[in-house]
Image (cartoon, rainbow, N blue to C red; front, side, top):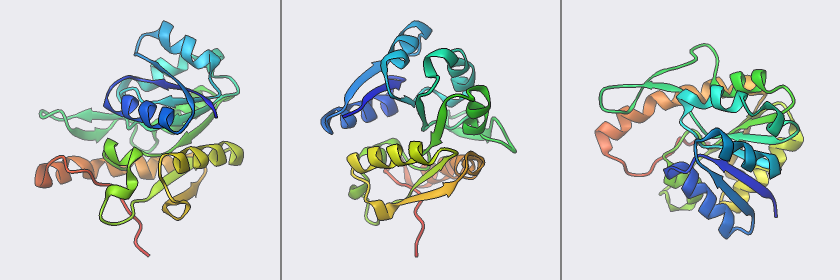
Length: 198
């Protein structure tokens, strides 16, 4: 059992919080206000960033003290949105939100994952017709193992989890968000995820 803080109480954060609670973890959900986020982060071992990616860097950089020594699981994608509200361009081309977070929070262990799928797949990967892939990016092997364990609790088989390497690899998975609006416009909001076929 882990003490987990989920920052963000929208569809992504609520979905993850409910699933992790069912898995036996003690979960606190904080809304986007700084006070609530700081209090939740202070008491957690693992913090999940499920806030909108465009504002995540500023919001989390302000929690540097509360996040010191913690594992920060970043599931957000930082994008500008098009007229229909769907992602249009990357906010940090040539970099990534995860890299920016790691730079701003040098004493926090940032791990990027679960950002290459629609949110229902995060907690129900086995519902897809073929196995999806969850990618891990981060500098700290122990932090990545802790996140791998959380993914297992969410229903991810170990064969479906691919460790890409350091935090710089997050720019590849974050760029995958550019697929999403086109898939949604062609197929609707049916759950889907990227998958490495071997």
